[in-house]
Length: 339
Image 1: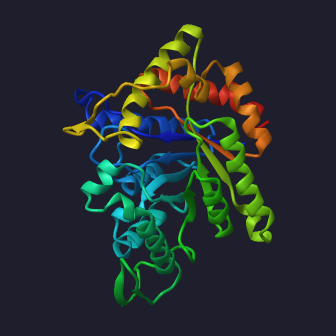
Image 2: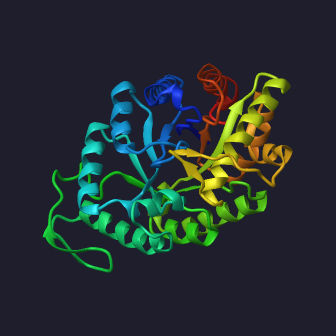
Image 3: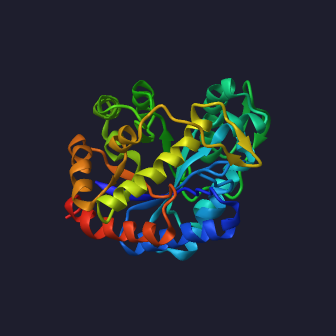
């Protein structure tokens, strides 16, 4: 089982400065590369101070310039808010500048607040995503492409420069619904998922759907991977653990606001809203614990056959504590799963 660090900006205090936020994430990526993590992943979000990354491909290029081996995943880019005729070229250039280390994670988007302010109705995102994905794959695979669909209509054109390899970088699909995981796997996509606050049975169903699709495929299914995203931190002791869980609880009071709540945002800052879930209940669904507890919590993931765990380490802890956690995880936890 491999591990990735999610470089997701959390910006609860504007006075901290966007330059410092991104420098922190760059520092995390450099450390992860040195410690032999498999990958770093980058979100795409606009207009809000959580998971804040309006330019993931630009950041991917910056990361590649400062690292040597680590894969760089977009996790995820929101296809319905982009024009595939220009975005396909940006993907090709980013793949060139990252020297083939780019893995393109794509999705429909989850936050109505940002998507609808881009002029895209939330109830249209699935249909727009489906067509956008088809257009993107065609532009990256074929030289002359024309289109006559619901959202795209254009005469023959060719994306330049041409991709390093036919079809462009590897693609990963962000999907939570088990049946959606099954169908996306059958189409040849790597999968990224998370049960979020769901129970362990949902995770089992998600993994089962992925494996069922792979087992029905030919040799091409063998190379497909399943990644699981979780908020995580290696705590030094019980007191430190409880402090970090409190940070995560505050983080989720904002996350829930834009993910499942009313989307109350003022000048880019998401309002923290009361949560029905208790702090203890949240703690059960997160990977915030000591290194020995972390090994115990991760073992069921390894037993299920999950290929990669994406660790979201940016939820309010200081940069010093976050770097220490990244290093501790690599030295005390990773060897149990990658001897």
